[in-house]
Length: 150
Image (tube, rainbow, N blue to C red; front, side, top):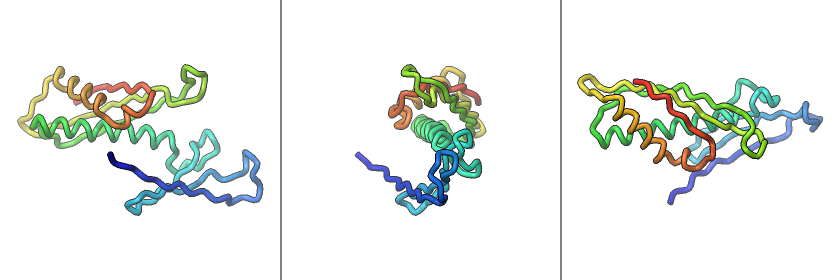
């Protein structure tokens, strides 16, 4: 099986380490050299100009669903020209009463190539299979709801 590596680097930038004072900005460094400035969500005193872990989690689920959907479409020889999703993660209390992303709504809009027709049932089956096969969805407890659109 494969391994996926991310290095997370934070260094104190403030004199005070009081909860309201310390800087939440940090660096995500990936093995391909990509670096991303990240921080806590603004609601938790993070920099709104940075990516926060919660939105990265939502993007990861959406991206995995899309990549799995594209693989399924390719295997079915259903050419996709475009795929767009507006994913929304909902923060709330989980069954243990702890804060968590408790639901993610995916709203994929798929444009198939000219001449490719996909009926509603087939599209729903493809999304269902995409969710079942998505590595990220299989790794989390969050409910992922797909609002299929084409």
